[in-house]
Length: 108
Image (cartoon, rainbow, N blue to C red; front, side):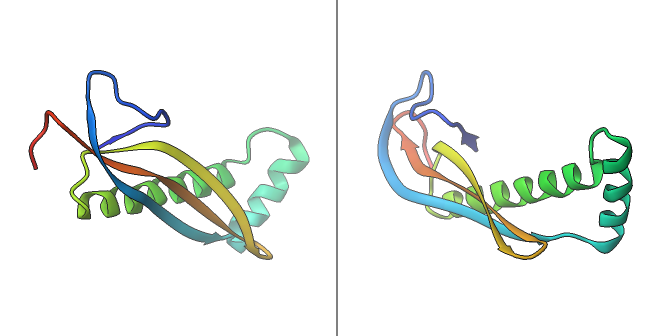
């Protein structure tokens, strides 16, 4: 499935907008990761434990959004945006959303 932050897809004609689709996940920090992250913060550098956590959340949210788009019969999701919010101490939501669309030149 094509996903793009732009409102169009080069070489394709959007003929139908199927509405907003979204995917979300809430992730909590892990005590073991927090200990390693605290050590890394003391010495500097990338906090790989949190980088991995955010990457996993982003992928899961994208998977959920594209699954919703597929269930509507979409060919692509345009105007994709990400958002985050703190849900509770140590837990954050990652939200991805966009507009599910169909192309003129593609069946199914």
